[in-house]
Amino acid sequence: MRVVMGRRTLHTGVDERYKLGLHVGHKYIGVCLFDRTDSIVVPDWPPFYRKDRKPLSIAKQLENSMNRFEVSKEIVVGRHPWSLSSKKQVKCDLTSGVTDIEDFIDEVFQAGVNANILTGVKFIFHDVRVILNPWAARERIKYLKNKGKIDFSGDEEVLLEAVNDTNATLLMMLHHLHMGGVKTYGEVTMKIEKNGDVTYSFGKVYLGTVIP
Image (cartoon, rainbow, N blue to C red; front, side):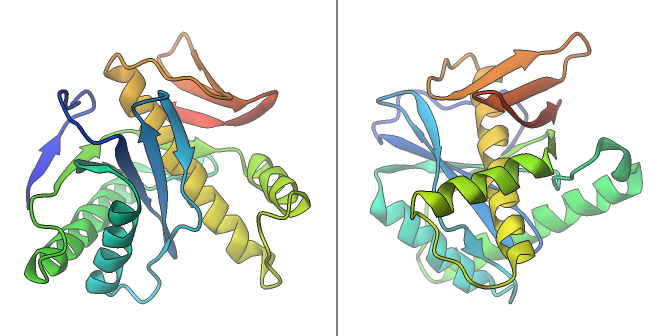
């Protein structure tokens, strides 16, 4: 698989308007886009469905997103599984999570290449942990429902996981860009803590923390 490892790897001189970010969850893969023209990162909804773990299915969903936008051939992937508490992720869980994500992306890549879907695509693993604020996801769901942007009548916990996957992708991508010296705009703000962690907020709502 064509993969570049490292936190600060950014590609310059790309003509495509958007750069795609992915974060792999249990049932979904969160998706976001960095708009080079406006220098903002926006979530792409809905996330990819991965429960059946069929790599070709994910590759086709990925292809659909790439076809909808002017997306570069470099895709940023969160390498660590996200969590709702830093205390819940022990070292062995992080190691197994990294392996699972790497293996899954490799399967998606191979399936896509074999079907000529992802030919020429390069995945960049961004090696950070994302700790999410669960309350922020619930508030986001309320907001989207009130605006009529989500029509969902199923299990609320399933929707909650999808939004968490999307939020994890957003924070991972913002951190990837910020560590590469790229300034972004929009409603999500960042703060670098004394210990090096980076916290992100949407207005007054704390979204989560990225741990390098």
